[in-house]
Structure formats: structure tokens, C-alpha cells
Length: 226
Image (tube, rainbow, N blue to C red; front, side, top):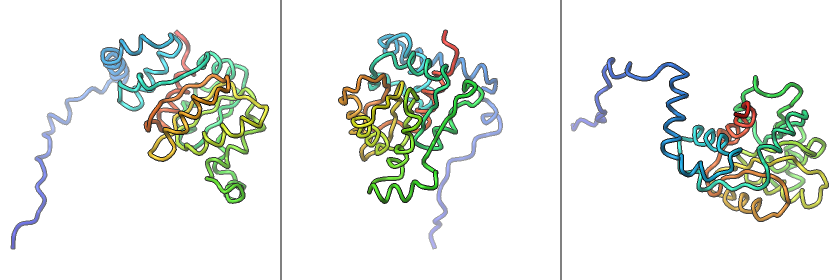
């Protein structure tokens, strides 16, 4: 009988496994030096307030080419920071976004809200004939005025929000939109860009996005400005 044992490469030696950077500050500094070396010219084309956010986004995904796909309108960083300084909430589409935001940096009194797990959402989604992520947006309305909206997963949440903003008078301070995937992600972000709502926003064109990137954008806002 032939030997069907799969062939695996030899394990790394203990010496090679131990040869990696361990110091957190050194890792941080080296990471951002590499980002600057690879994406510096592209970062320089952005408004100054957006460059730290773009660096954080790159750091969260490891892709320096995302800068060319960033789209934004208005003073999104200043507007979001002012909202948080005033105690307005962060409204997140999924718990992964909320979990990724560095809690110790959140200003006192600012709540990070995710309504996706609220008890009424399954029935509401069935009644509206939409996804739970979209239905969860319905529960944002009481807190939506001057809030910071952060979408890191569901294109349907962004589509639903844009539809409601055509009817609701409430206006968020800023929208950080990073829905991800193959169905609706591209289209939902293009809909935000084309909506002409006059609201500050930051988004990433194309399929790429995700909760880690959305949380990274918020974490950049929560850093002390240089």
C-alpha cells in the first residue's frame, strides 16, 4: 500500500522561533515606520486630519494600498471628535466593532451602542422583510442626532441608514462606513458617496472593510491629536 501520509515542511528550529521582536513599543514604532515607508506619498495626499486615521486603518489590515480607495467628505475627524467630546454615543452595527474600540480611551459618558442583539430585532427584521443588521438601525433613531455611526460589517445596515436619512430629520455627526464582502458592500459605499446628504463621512471603496478597520478608525479618533 502506498504511503499516503501528507508531506509537511520541517518544523522551524527553536532558534528561529525565538528570533522575533518582543518589545511592544518597538513593534509599534517599526510597524508605523514600515507604513510610512510604503504609503508615505499616498498618505501625504490626504488632508492632515485624516492621515493618522489612514495609518491606523493600514495597521489594522496590513494593506498599504487602501489609501487610494479612501473616500471622504467634510471635516469627518473634527466632527466625530466634537461629537464624542459632547458625550454623544457611538452607534455600531455589530458587537465586533464595539469590542474592537479601546475602552479606556472612550470619553467619560460616551456609550458605544450596538442594537443588533436587542430582543425585538428578529421580529422587527421579519416585519420589515430585511436583515437583522438593517432592522437594528431602526433602534438608533432616539440616539442618532449628532452621534458617530460606525458600520464595520453589514452593507444592509448602511443601505437602511441611507434610506432612513431621507425621511428622518435626525442627522449623525459623522459616518464611518466599512461594510465588507461580496454582496452589497461596494454598492452600499457608493450609495453613501452619491447620496449627497451633506454629512461628514469616511469610507473605503470596494469589497474591503470589516469590523477591525471600523474599530481602528474610531481608535484613531480617540487618540490625542498631534
